[in-house]
Length: 481
Ligand code: NAD
Image 1: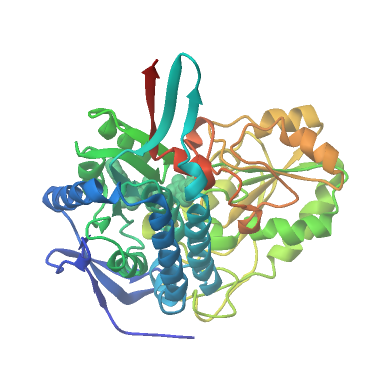
Image 2: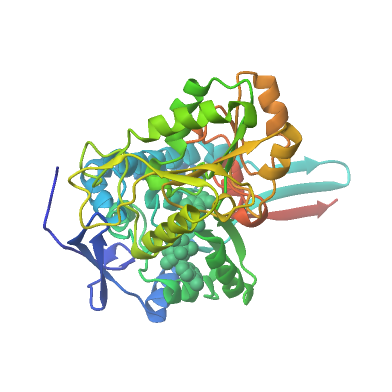
């Protein structure tokens, strides 16, 4: 297992240079709480103002850079990010608690987002024009200005690139506020990217809610790209309301997996489990509740528990770990309280798997399966964001559609069947931003599919041209002949 005792100093990135760290917060390894990973600057409204003003000045020239040149620079940024995965993934593991392949996936997905976005820039900027006897009309896409991006800790690299790539591709500049629970690897990667770009195009200010508020309410910020919890998003919307900012919000989920009665249980479990406990269940679109036809319930639950029992939980740099600790104390307290509450309910909560020697002095929680869970139980209705999953029996398809949609969330969802037509029919009845058939994990994502949520899971979409459209305005020009 790799260890290091180096404590990094991570300042704000205002322009291409990192500022000194006067006031700072320690970032500790959630899997070894004695290990201080970094000292990270804590910003003020004055730091936010400095970064936004610099980004606003940079915008005046960045918006004029020809789209093809911006595409070229994004491809260079993709190379830098891909080249940063080797040295920065272990650091990311030590601050966010994931296992190494999950951190590497974060860098790989982020790189893919930059490359895919770059490939779309040329076509995206071709204006739509009409020329007839009466008029010449040109509808042109123009950038909005300074973008405030606010991201969480669970997959910080790709979630940042999902904002940075479309923002920069379309001629905006950006000020990012990372999560205080995973700021270091991301800031170092962004510093490398910022060095290749004009001064002020990419900026980072660290801090928590107060810095986030200063950023999302700043009058020179024209657009907010936010990923995080639904409760925080309400505050972000309120703070952006004062200056009528455009918002894209990617929020929480309570994703249902609907198993149909013709399922191949073993085949389905091979894929489904990748979407349940990966990142210790701390993924917005993780499988959060599983509906199983009553006549298959016993066989499915037995096979499910048998596999879950094989999980080994340990430090993210322990190569034997299937998953790592939870990210922070609030997360640990809320997941362990939920487990206790569920244990005291009518359902049967089983603790499975084992802890490795490396699972000491951290926020480690073994996987838990809730057998005979009720659809109406709290565990079936919340975003648990941890390694506990309810298995719920249903009687008919009408009931399971109603239960799948009985949520204020609507991020992703999945249907599991050997009959693809049946799966497609069911998918169309589910209220969600995405519905996957026979998959529900990182491998389900395809950059050609817009990603986002319905209801209180968010506003707007990320990835591809749908994502780029969130960062531009249509400027409509007409000549009356
Ligand atoms: P969070 O909402 O607590 O924090 C997210 C970010 O917002 C952090 O950077 C935080 O410092 C900042 N913030 C907090 N208060 C703020 C305020 N008042 N104004 C502006 N910024 C503020 O979320 P978290 O615990 O970091 O992440 C977990 C949540 O993120 C889960 O709900 C998860 O579902 C969601 N998430 C969603 C997606 C998606 O794409 N839909 C992806 C990943 C995570």
